[in-house]
Image (cartoon, rainbow, N blue to C red; front, side):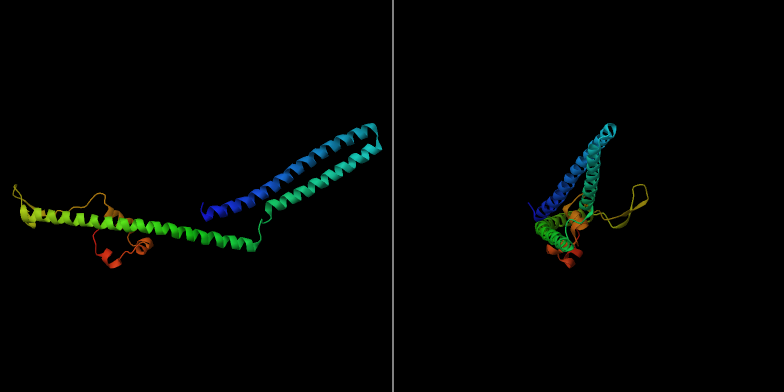
Length: 203
């Protein structure tokens, strides 16, 4: 479990505690509504029976239940809108999250740097293969097949231009390194040498 997950657990506990408190007052508000409903029924019965004592009791019950509901609603509203921590706690947690994230990113960067070093080595091999293939193609085209450079005659009496044949892989580690990794901050942390890389062909 990472430290960020521990912080997440801490924040979740704060929110869960607040949620439970709010739910507690939702229940109390519901109980107050039931008391108001029951007291209104008692008031109607007292009116029908012209019972002063029951009438006064019902009135008092309605008053008490309404005021209780009002208090519960105000408390619930505070719980829903008031900050759950003070500013100092907020700033402290904010710093903790950012510093923890930086530390965890650094750990991942170390792992990535090792991978980048390996890819760099493989990319060197990819470049060597491309270079060797182009060397062999040139030897085949110019030294063995002895195709002349520039304009050459065709069998139909015309001419065509003789371009150097070259090899370029459709997919290669060298190409991937050049397009996705080369020049990034991580590649530099992995020991990439800018001048050397700039003069290398990564086909």
